[in-house]
Image (cartoon, rainbow, N blue to C red):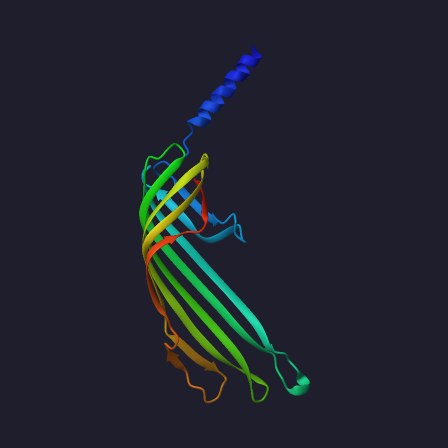
Length: 225
């Protein structure tokens, strides 16, 4: 009798799992990170994507990347015997990218959710470089160069989510669209360098325009909440 009850309980659990709701319902949301299982860095967060489902087949999405980095390189050691002071080259970068879009999901299967959609991409980058030099009286002067870039894109996308467990999915995506990149005007200023004049320039600035297919070379790992 106990074996029969245990067997019935197991069958009930399997049946419940088989009919569990894997896909997001209206009002639910998802978060995603990217990973490349065959890459040198298997787990990477090249931004975070958020989705909000207004229905089982319609979703608003927003990708966000925010990054800051800085480096400092010593170019001259301090040497009091030779009246030398320590000098450094410093560089900092700041990048922000927003990617709002919409998705239309199709029936697929209980675990597979194919979709199409459209995404707008807006990105801004800023660089700040400081190159130090020694000036008379053992003081430090510097050349400061500030620049930046602007990126715009518009893509038609197609992809799918495969739910490996309840509220946990893997996915991938391809797209076709346009991308534009433009370097902004550089501004050069001087700190404690006598006779140097500030200036602005577009020399070596690049502008590019691309139209064609594109593929995200990473798998997406997401969860529903």
